[in-house]
Length: 374
Image 1 (tube, helix red, strand yellow):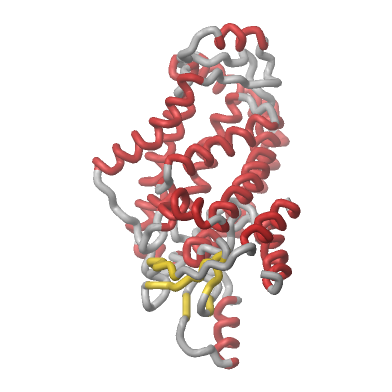
Image 2: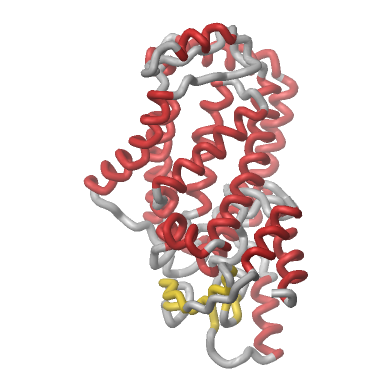
């Protein structure tokens, strides 16, 4: 990963191109923010606070800096709720270890139920299920939260609000999302290695050009394997997409034609989650699919992965710093969550990781190291 970063930075510094971009950003008082593209590297102008406010006016005095620092260190308003949720999470985890046999029976029964469904055997199941999860999570979380004014204190900026959309736009987005993925599903043989499936069955499927059903294992996975496969898959996906995301921002042409559309908004909101070009959407899905395949994840593990994955992405773009956010539940700032991703959409030149923060910290270190050389 370090060698990859060095390669990106050195290539981006071969030529200097100064271009002023109009970044629509209501986080700043001017609602516009200038950024300089130097060899594909975004350089910020103005000073910024922790939550993404931009100040392009006179330099801040030392007194004002002290005030801003004290304000930034102000205790999180929902800290008590966070502590309660952490205790509940730990209790559930301990309960999982104490009642492992009972939970394993639940897993077995749930997989048996899924296997009885024709849709679960379809090659289009994961595409349909992902679309369903997105359509359910959006109204449950961002839309409902926006209705309660008491929760406005958790907004990362006062201008954050749920952006309503038309039914036509929802259908259009669904078709745009499912179309390319269903095309891949139709012509690709679904292979799940390491879960007890006879490889000869995949060879039989390859004889047919069009795929309609997928070969599934008869036995359910162990609960412990579900937990570690999910954890490991999210770690691999996070690292993989960090590399892809970094390149999309550092390369001028990739940013302009593939990734810029995702940043084309006034204020970040939940529907920006699906505001992707087709190449970027396919890359996102294939990255997650690759991360799951690395650990031979069971089809049931993949099914559980989907709603968690979509919840994280929607939460990242919600514009809220809620107590139940993963970045609040996990201590030591290991997870970036909506706070870091809000900064990314505000500045465009930091916080590239979709989940964790360790690679972003490494990126900042190397960014400072190569800044003088560029």
